[in-house]
Image (cartoon, rainbow, N blue to C red; front, side, top):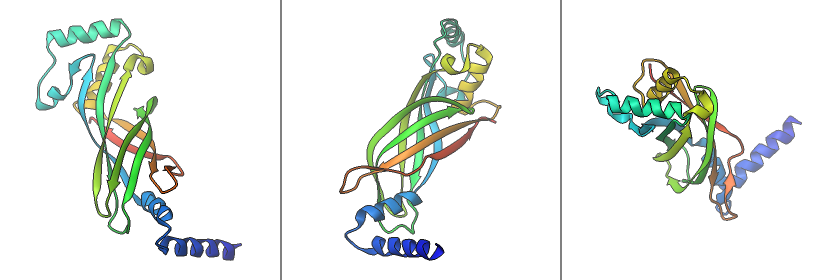
Length: 196
């Protein structure tokens, strides 16, 4: 049995060196790509711009009234752009051709929304790309109507809270091949601590 496993590994190694087997090379290349959550930008909750809090600004009376009204209606929309960095290590010999990324967003351990990032991106060996993924969800659908906890969560996502929470993205990338798109064999969990 170990001999058969060694033979399979050796055979795969030979196939990866054959010029005509670009698909296998691309798959191997994608498996070595490192994904990380870099930052959050353009964060809004109930129409209130959270990015300005990073510069030491504060919420005014109109902002607080807007938030209070949104909570009373059980409709507290949070939108932001989550920047996913994808890096192809120097050791890879071929570019990784990413065509899409299926994702599910977790905020502080709670599964929220899912979607697909569709943007054909080539990641050269030793290079990296930024994948800006737009997120939008109604906080009350997942976290209830407690205004204090919603405000803390929104502030954490914007990176302006003293409490620490985690943003997690479960993702499955797909690459382009001569036979069409092929999905990554498993789910990649990418975590990003915010706040604190």
